[in-house]
Length: 272
Image (cartoon, rainbow, N blue to C red; front, side, top):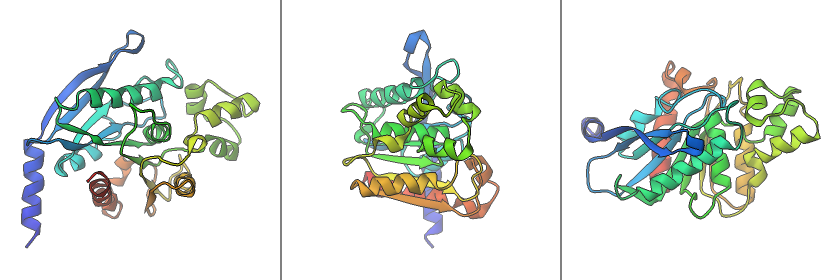
C-alpha cells in the first residue's frame, strides 16, 4: 500500500523541480565554465549535491556520463548542480581540481538564491570525476569543505594503479604531463592521489564500485576507505557485484540498480 504514495511523491518532486541551465560559475584564464542546476519546489534550504562528470579528465560534459544520477537526485528531493571543468591535455592538473573547488565556492556564495543549505552540500563524481571529488574532499579549505563525498569508481592511489600496470596510461599522461614511472613521474602521481592527503577530520565518504571494473581496479575504493577509517573518518563501500566501469552500462542490468536507493539513503542519513 505504500508504493503508490511513494511513486506519487517522486513524480511530484520531479515535476516541481526547477531547472536552470548553462549558468557561468567561473572564468579561469578567460574560459567560461558553466553548470546546470535543479532546485526543488518549496521553501528550503535543501540538502545539495554537486555532480562532477567522468571522461578520463579529457572528455565529457556536465550532461554526459552522469545522466543516470540526476533524476534519482531530483526524485529524492535534493537540489543539485552538475558542472563543466577544464579538460586535459589543454588544461593539465590541477586545473580540473581548481574548477571543482570554484564550483563549491560558487554554490555556497549563491546558497540563498538557489535554496541551498551550505552546511549540507555533498560532492558526487564518477570515474575521473570520482577522483576529483575525492581529491577535493580530502584537501578541504575553509571555503571548499563539504559535508559528504559520493565517489563512483574513482582512482585514488595513482602510484599503485600505474605501477601495477607497468606504465603511465594515456589519460594520466595528458592529465599530469608525465610519461614515465621515474622518480619525477612517481612524485606527480603521488601529488595527484587522494590517498596522499588522508587525515583526521574529513567528511564521510561513500564509495560505489563494480567488481568487474576493467578501467579502475575495484580495490582502489576499499583501499582509500580503509585509510580513511584508520584516520578516524566515516566511510563505506557499496559493492556492485559483476558490474563494469560506467553507470551508463549499469542501466542495462536491474541487479546493478541497487546503488540508487543506497545512494539516496546514505545521503539522507549523512546530510540530515
